[in-house]
Image (spheres, rainbow, N blue to C red):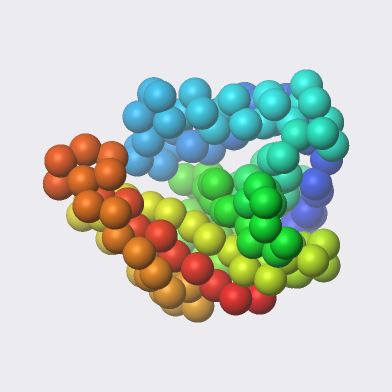
Amino acid sequence: MDDLIYRRQVRSSDPDHIEAIVRSSGFFSEAEIAIARELVCDRLERGPESSYQFLFVEDQNGVLGYTCYGLVPATTGSYDLYWIAIADTVRGRGLGKILLRQTETRVAEIGGTAIYAETSSRAQYDPTRRFYERCGYVAEAVLKDFYAPGDSKIIYSKAL
């Protein structure tokens, strides 16, 4: 994984890359996939005025994964991690952890003091929750039945 390239600039081809990556996980509904596209399109349309920031990781073959994050409005250093996704073809090789660390570094460089991430309580998301915990995130809150009956939202945080 020495040949990785990181970029923050969003390109016109990125909505399609993001959709392919998110879709490849098999986790997300069509509505969630549409939201992932919507966030990158907002950044393309509004540029720096958009509250959504991106970090892409790629190699010579193309985009391998990305994060989408942004400052929580009315805070001085709290950032939401909206998305972290790795293409199915390279999942399980530690790239998610590398990308998350790179994102945390960039957030800290721009004054971030904490990152918040949320995920579902469904069994399907057990690997996601273990990932956050292995990366030093702590479950701070559980909002019961948030997404649907029996599907709670778990909010994780990490101080930077």
